[in-house]
Length: 295
Image 1 (tube, rainbow, N blue to C red):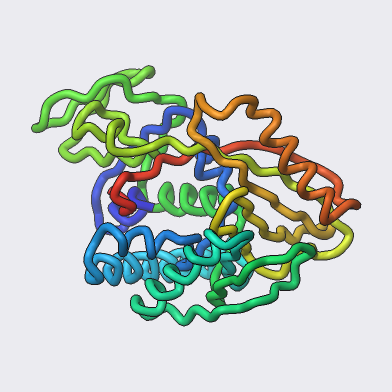
Image 2 (cartoon, rainbow, N blue to C red):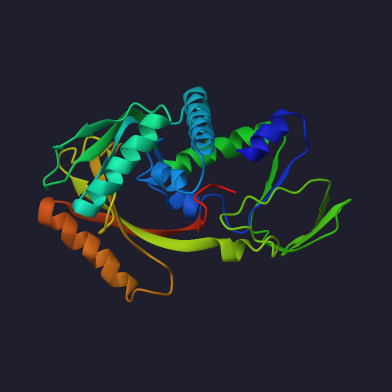
């Protein structure tokens, strides 16, 4: 997205990709485009003044609107779904009440619900209507294609190994050297050993299993506010319906067997959707800033 916007503004842009476009966390996300993000707003409000929360929501609103317009203009399929954060137990319910206050104070039209059309009981839920879901790889393909149209050069399998200098900036990659006047580091965790980001962000691995279902299993994008973490959304396709079930997150290197975490999602899903047939399973890794805001 950054490369495309810079190219539209008339800059000469090269994208250096360590692997292939989309083979990292972005391509593996559940791709919920939502201003209701679990209990994120109440987390930010507990660490920052209200003005920061308002700015965060406005930035998220602008980003979601930009994405929706881009998808409409370039034929990327999107589905409009409500976003719902729900609670399993009492601690989750308390977190939801705080999130309701934070969201309302920031101008988001969330509503409280006691019951949901799900096969398990909840202790309450917040709903924000009119959010989006999409296929992240389809979006990435469209962004890359549009960037190339505007003159961006995308170089894959070009991992950056070293960055030196300032005028010009000199980059050493696995495939050669590049010089530029400006460098944007857009990796999930900044790959330069500057600013101590490794000490200010916490890695978080989570898991997803996709299941084929005869009918649409869920009608919204669901996310739990407490443990065990659960993320649910549907995927319509030419062969019927898919259900994405995510969760069982942990800090990488801790928490025992990763295979058992996937098995836990399978067992939980079959308890409530016994006829669901698994099609794929994967994981993704994010990095969570200590202050709750994006860098």
